[in-house]
Picture 1 (cartoon, rainbow, N blue to C red):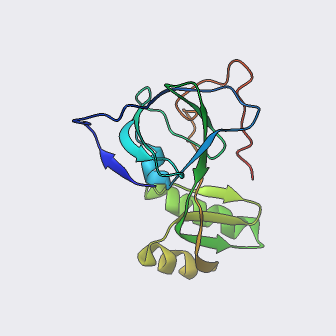
Picture 2 (tube, one colour):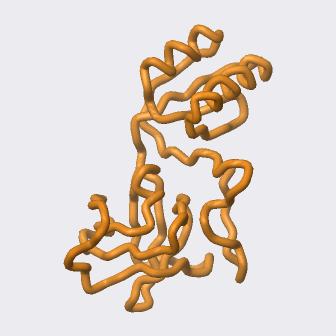
Length: 167
């Protein structure tokens, strides 16, 4: 589960250049934190240890459950790696909305769930959110932030390619 920045001077023999259709069992898995799932050009290591070159269209953001096609035809399933996150909880939807508003004003990527918001761990943000009245827990968890109002996740959902982003 490692990535190096592009350009890739000596690309690995195996390449990932396209998304694969959903369904069926994957042949391999690729587990990456959110920051690395935003890269379209990188050298990555599949969970089984094999190094491959990632050459996806610019702007592609990989989500847990996405499927990728290896140059040899096999399918790789993407998994979100657990990472250091802060989860802010509130039973009061007004408090939760207020926290989301202030975090959004700071351009913080947010994952939103019922009664909680999650962001990459930052003690300064934790203090701000606590001051707003929320309970904040530092934990390790997969991070799947919202994609934003104007974008999906860098590819279309044609040909039956769907996701459940509300896990």
